[in-house]
Amino acid sequence: MKKLLAILFLIMTVQGIAETVVRGTYETKKKRYVELTETFEKEIFLNYVLPDDKKEIVTYRNDDYDILVNKNDLLEVYNKGRNEPITDIKSKITYKDTSFKKLGPIYNDFAELIENNKAVVYDRNKKEEIKYLVKVKYINAIYYDEGGGSMYDGYKFYKDKVWTEPVLKFDIVTQYGIAIHSSLGDNPYNRELSEKEKERIKKYDEKFNEEKDLYQRAMQTPDVTQSFSY
Image 1: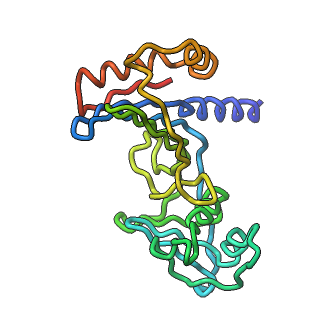
Image 2: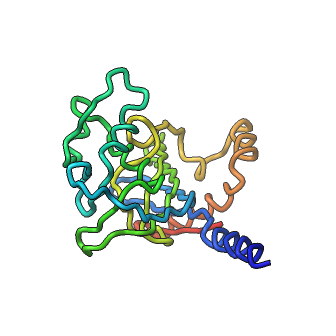
């Protein structure tokens, strides 16, 4: 009975934060409408213990956080699928090391270790170790006033359930370590749709009416972010 109650409590907890938030903003200076859709993916609980030998630790350092991992774990992830694996790696890594002429998008490998609870994430500003993260998938659609648009999608880690402070300034999605980019047509919220578009929306975008309403609200109050969740 206790086990059943624990399972039910876990389900209720996950359901409590498993949601999608859509934010819309019309940016006056850039003359474009930006729609950001973020969806909860998973919680990550961190309790990893680093090796005692500091020579076996590699640190990725960005503006506010240090990510510390076991060197062997990092090499294992980094070398997957590589024709020319490396046998050693420097102990301190920054974004400057992630060009294709150097280590490439190795921050993706740090992200994989974080997700698998094989890393320590340290907040340098607060001088504390982070024990909890939320992985969020995002889709960022941008429609320009002059026509056309762009879409970027990827994943980010946040340090709280309200998704206000991203911990890592990179995406965890492709081997390139950047958001996937797709070209979009003209803004669908302010024009007559073709029958083909209507069919596609009916099949794939059940929240289109809410998104259109979001756009209209954003246009009424430019430079102020509007939102809805489900």
